[in-house]
Image (spheres, rainbow, N blue to C red):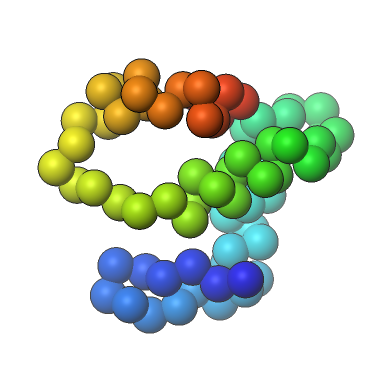
Length: 70
């Protein structure tokens, strides 16, 4: 899996894993991995970016789609 950067360059897989681990540790500080959190994080990271939307409004709108992250 690779994620596109804003200039359409791909991020190395090791960096992606490192970023995922960082956010997963935030979600679960006891380092117990839960598949649902991982799936939710992947869905969030793969969602389209709308720079014209207010972040707080976006999270309020999508809090049911991302309950762990929100």
